[in-house]
Length: 317
Image (cartoon, rainbow, N blue to C red; front, side, top):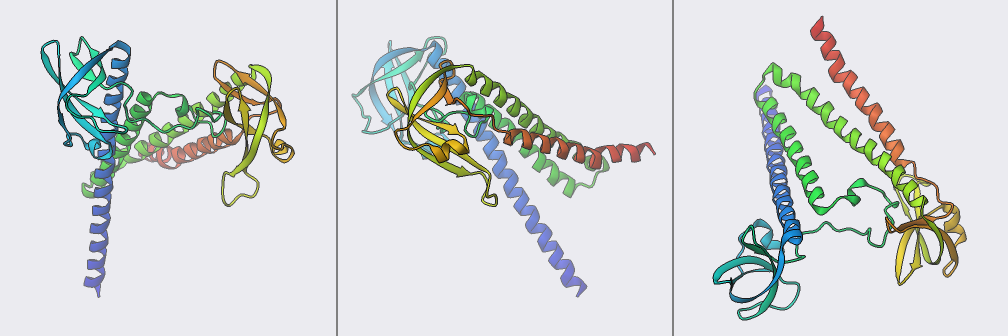
């Protein structure tokens, strides 16, 4: 019986180890891919700033996969001549079929001596072009794609190191490794807490900035709401789709406005031209970010007391 229990425990430990190993490798690949896309975005932005458009004629095409993200795009590697030299670059096709003899416009960087297709990069999807940033505000919405890939690479790299560290502590029983573990965990949670704190401060700063805009009137097209939590009956966000100039905008509204407004009703709003954002005249700030921030600080202090201060006190004794 003891042998069966021991065997069962060993199998569970092995399965847990294999699962952790697979997750670590997956996160490691995500970190590597994020840094690859960050470098690609950085180079693309450099070409946009410093490159010059040049029309070239394709002499050869190659539709093979030479990068991990080639499998997810409709691409072709084109070869062409420019100033007596032969060049090759990756070209993404939205529609149609690029073939030999076709002419395309590329960006040429004289210092790098290389070409890139203008405007074709792997972007983060964003709905903030017609949605107000005050709806589900996050500072990441104000970052460029380059910054987003960089932050994502840092996040995945940190998570990869934590998972790798956890595997080492489960295999190698060294006292100093188990000592450092709680410090890393608290530092990781503290980083998240600082992010939420900065996010909250930026939200109130952005709210005041939009509020300092000019008053105007828009026409309501429709209203709707979204439940923040399925378990909560009262935590909703309310939105209105309004006609603004020649387009439509989705802006936050109060619960009272949701009950009152009907299609084609006029709505007094404040529009900030610099941020290209607006909100109703009587719209108040959201405090959900502040609540999350306060909770995260209490949670961080609790972890620090449980795993750091007690250990330091015991080691001093």
